[in-house]
Length: 314
Length: 229
Image 1 (cartoon, each protein chain N blue to C red):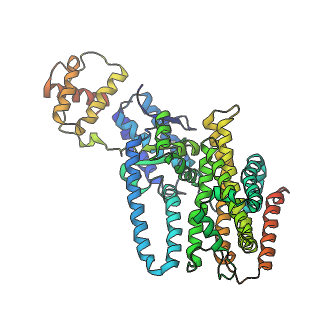
Image 2 (image 1 turned 90 degrees about the vertical axis):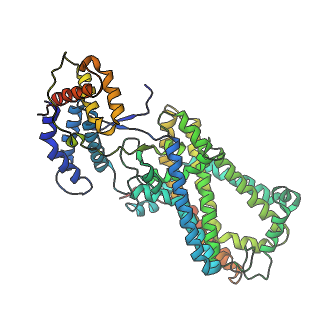
Image 3 (image 1 turned 135 degrees about the horizontal axis):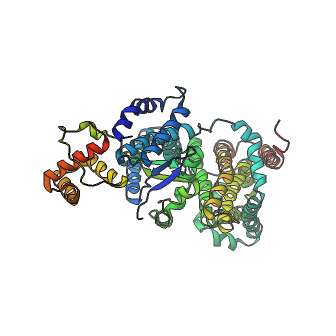
């Protein structure tokens, strides 16, 4: 068949198909799409001109996007994700999660304990100005703990915590693609700085103020950092030890497996920012209430990740 | 062959062709997006500055959303195109040709941080040059490509000209040769007169003439091959 005849025979069909794309539920799109694919194959095989092939190519591309693009999956199944999916995923990735716990926990614990006695250790990690700030932030008699400037508004701090903490979580994940090094860095140094601050403030006799500020939101903030870091470590490990897969494939699969942790971590960070901005800082709430609520939240978070979703859904 | 075309086979057994975009158009698209983003940031910040310290908090949240969400929102809801990519005729697609969804777009956005390292997108640029398909780390991890949007089809034959006197083929042509002549005729409206004649002169053995007469004869052959009355 000469090209001219081919075009004249099918042009109406092609135009109809182009109109069909973009409007869902109109006509038999899959059937029309298969015919266009057939026409494209014919046009290539019969060596029709580049212009016609490109025209059909464009049509096939649009049909392909229409048929195989999945509907947005953001709202679908999020309840199930919260109740079961996330804790299951965390337990499935317990290797990197435990590694992240150790990478954060060991420097944190060691410095907290050590710098109570030996304040030089804290001074090696933090600058003197930073340590002085730390002390002033948790002085008794303040209206709000944890603020460098007493006039800072709650909403302002909320914005700052979102902007800063969620970003640190994202970076702890993204840094994992450098063979896990970025995640290790973020986990270790946050542990180091946290431990130095805690030890120093405790040494200065402000321990109760400090821990009452920290305990409320840390149940969300610290697991959040650990999940982000663990997700990054999972990427890094996939690149280092891809097993019997190509590195690219291993990376893509690892990303898919780790991404739920990043979503969970971001959500927890937003929750932590709420608590930290609007409640942790308040010096009016009795410290016993704060320790009670914070302890309960810690227990709830740990129980959630350990036990939620263990039974089969339905 | 030195071309960057990527072929993807669909379940229907036909191949789709994509041409991945190189660093230069992508950098320009990035620049345009950055200008748009920072302008929007600046306008919102100056408006919210009226609210004092509370406004600062809201601005920080907006900065956060713009930093991470700007590409994701546009790529998911605008067919893989941020405004910058639209202006440069680029589009983000999945490696199999389907549109990007939430997860892949989020991964691309998150890993922009890693691509930026150590400075000025050094890692991303290196990754783009190492692979065949210009993928930065974010693309590799998400399984996405940035491709040139193919130009819209224009039925050039319809523009046509006055009908040519038929010119008989001096000898039979193979299928590929036939296509070359037909594609030449198809492109004539896009080229300058001089270029058309220059190309036509290459086919002197076929048309037996040079200059405008050669081109006229080639167009006549093409019409005949195409089956145009």
